[in-house]
Image (cartoon, rainbow, N blue to C red; front, side):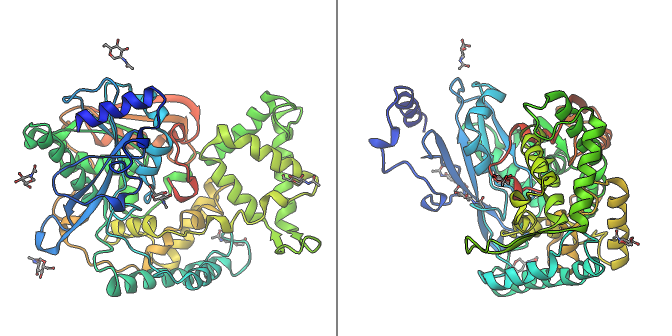
Length: 509
Ligand SMILES: *[C@@H]1O[C@H](CO)[C@@H](O)[C@H](O)[C@H]1NC(C)=O
Ligand SMILES: *[C@@H]1O[C@H](CO)[C@@H](O)[C@H](O)[C@H]1NC(C)=O
Ligand SMILES: *[C@@H]1O[C@H](CO)[C@@H](O)[C@H](O)[C@H]1NC(C)=O
Ligand SMILES: *[C@@H]1O[C@H](CO)[C@@H](O)[C@H](O)[C@H]1NC(C)=O
Ligand SMILES: *[C@@H]1O[C@H](CO)[C@@H](O)[C@H](O)[C@H]1NC(C)=O
Ligand SMILES: *[C@@H]1O[C@H](CO)[C@@H](O)[C@H](O)[C@H]1NC(C)=O
């Protein structure tokens, strides 16, 4: 594969369209690649190589069959046969690493340097990797009906909203269980311990391809957000296989496996607070919601929120004969929670919208809350399969205390977060999974973490104000991995927002 690649880069650097002369071997979709148990790289997407690696569905019972995992590689311009591949693990769960690397090619090379190969992948169950599961089996009407029943708005938008969300949540799991039974028998075989095992398969296959001993292969991983759960899980299962590991923007893996998304709200209001100070500092030219003091900006923002809470805005669209809409408080809260992922990029937009709202113009918020409806199930399926033996969110009492907790911690995001992360959807999932695929199974009976150092110390990084994957989770995770180093950046936002997916709404953490 070395020769075609260098030819490819030569042509690209000469400004020629590389696929002009080489159309037939350049592929643009993974379906065009034959899955193989040996790693084989096919030129793809102009400048990358792709592979579909066949892996056992169940590592403890190979007769269950195989599935294939999609990998994408960007060869470093200065990389040699011995150069390690840095695997970028996307967020989610449900995030596509293929999309992430394809849309951040230049950034990735800059971030890591040309002496490395950069690899990303779609974890099991995600997009180009099997096994796939569509809980509504293509029945868009059923999916829409479910969303209408379940996604009623922020927790307390009406007196019945909370109860409606709790009771309707069971519908989702029942559709997923049924789809597994009828159409995708291994649709739940997508848990994070299995993903970690797939990474081991990958690095061993890579070593084999390079003529090195598979048993010595080490993982070089850059995990962001939910990708840090994959990293921490791998490190717990295979502590002697760490080449380098950077975990950036930490999700507390223990909470993740408990389906307890509570620490996530810790820094949300602190992050929202920076909107007022940034807006004030930027000045009226650059921040349309500017005010003479940060306190003035906060007070006006709170007034806009209260106004919308009591007075939803009708958008009739009568003249244009377009669809009518009603902009509600839930739409504004949906704007807030999505903006927090990438404050630097979103705050100016948020300022414009708040400025218009102050003048009674709510048109930018039309459909904002509904726009968060899940159209792909992979994220929920992974999250629910991962937590099903430890799920701490099943009864209405637990759900109520969870929602009250998030509200008590965050005035701005607390009432939208439970329906945004939608962890209650897991309560009626019934995955029948072998022990090898779950925490509290054979590999991970103890908590995530170790009592001895990994083969190379893990680098854990966090922003000082991280609204989604808070600093506290980084500290906790560091304490679970002896020898790990904690690196802080004085910044606001989710660490991974430096390298963000083109589809942030599908990425919950
Ligand atoms: C593919 O892998 C198998 C073992 O899984 C090995 O025996 C075989 O030689 C490999 N084939 C090639 C072409 O590398
Ligand atoms: C392994 O999987 C096969 C096929 O699904 C099944 O028939 C068999 O009972 C499994 N064996 C064990 C030990 O679980
Ligand atoms: C490649 O390596 C050479 C020699 O170490 C160095 O001078 C050059 O700057 C590197 N190129 C890139 C793109 O990193
Ligand atoms: C799935 O992958 C294809 C090709 O990589 C891409 O065009 C598409 O947007 C992806 N879909 C999702 C949901 O990530
Ligand atoms: C209302 O706001 C939208 C987007 O924020 C903007 O495009 C539009 O021009 C505004 N309408 C009026 C009448 O100001
Ligand atoms: C909803 O509002 C009621 C009345 O203010 C309050 O008692 C209850 O705790 C709230 N529920 C949640 C889940 O926040």
